Image (cartoon, rainbow, N blue to C red; front, side):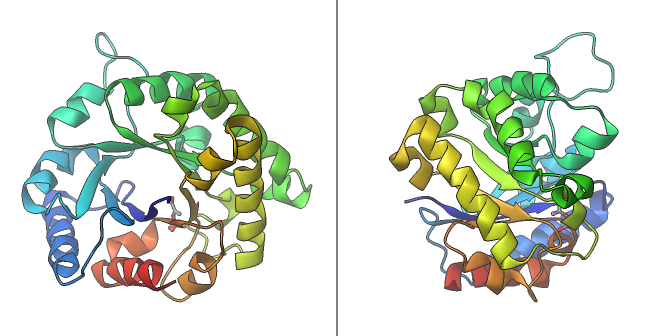
Length: 257
Ligand code: PEP
């Protein structure tokens, strides 16, 4: 059965000290939770600069450490980039890929993401692959088409064994950091669509086992409605992941629903 996951994306927030405090608080709070890690996962995606120090203070049997991005090359003359082997060497075992902010502000395309995904998989990193439409696309009712092509152009080039290693995060861009959350029905509709196209491509069993997270202003006040939907397996959480109580509350809600 697919894993239910709550993943926090810290984005470019916290300095080392406050990031360490946040990671310690999350790790401390999760201690009291009886977490069956075969069924549930808790992930934090910190800035690169924090990875090593955070890896030293979290209980890695309960909290998985993720980067927010990796370079689209293995190594070499790519000033300012951070490679998959670098993030692995400082304790990360996962990475976000294709977050909408990376697509919008840093020009990440399906071509770049295809390279990054291959590198992530080559390094045994868990890829959390982000997709989602912008407001104009939703208003023009093109959201199904947009997410289909984002998946088609990258994930559907994988062979089935590699596809099974990927987590998908559906994040409508109009809901990210805006306080405007997709309704449970809106989110469920598109999650079901994603599962359907995965099923058409790789078969029903693979689709059933694919974890699909929702992201976009998810918080303890709206998570129960979202997480109770049959095709929403958890959340990719921005703002609320910076507040340890809220973040752990989201895990608890995920475990209850
Ligand atoms: C995100 O950055 O992936 C995200 C969902 O942010 P927020 O929860 O703040 O909308």
